Length: 184
Image (cartoon, rainbow, N blue to C red):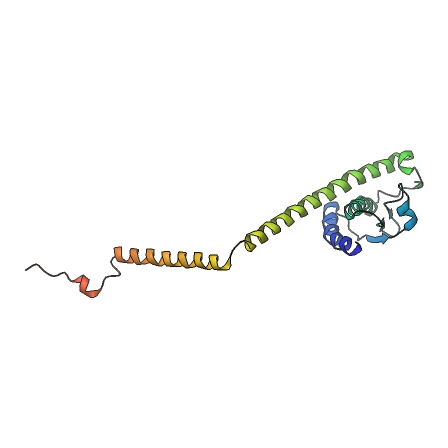
């Protein structure tokens, strides 16, 4: 799963970076934590502003859910790059988003923007994949012999039309046709 997730993240990260406009790269670190995976209310991800790192728990999680968590944490990274995240005297322990109105707003923004950015990226990716599949189907459905015969038909027909036009315009006459015999 990690290689699939890495491939998807390589596609998603530049998109999120562009949408969020952060000016410093974030490190993404995958965590495989057995105890956390067993906990139905375990952690999904968190952001470390000092190291500009996103830690994301991946064990027993769907890749889509992992990417959505990364998207949320990248909003926190953007907030950190703008100097909005850590204000003097802020606590980030348990319940921080319920106690501190500023951090509550930061969480709201991360949920809203993170989900929308991920959804937009996913929808665009699905559309591109569908277009690729459709194009491949069209290519696969063309029988090379049929295609060749169709091309031969069009070439032959174009040649016939060209000859007809040349004859009508008088360019295809044989020298003997130019001189009409005078009636005797």
